[in-house]
Image (cartoon, rainbow, N blue to C red; front, side):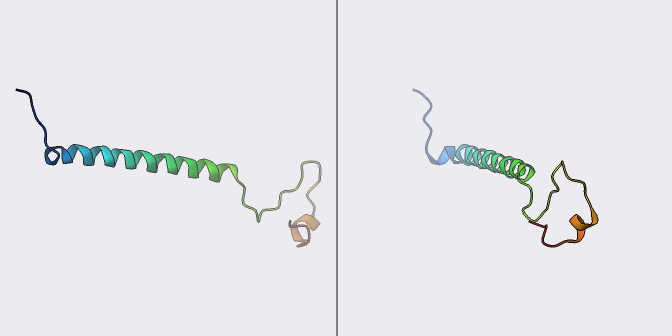
Length: 66
């Protein structure tokens, strides 16, 4: 005669597997969010091109802020 498990007796094991799966998905989601934040610059920041010299006009003219 073998060991017979019931659905009720394995509930703790199932809950543990479910919790581990949720934590793994949350960890992956957080990693994706962090990498996305690092790659995308904020759209309200004006970056002066490398071949131009920064002047007072660049800093104070609101029309240049794209």
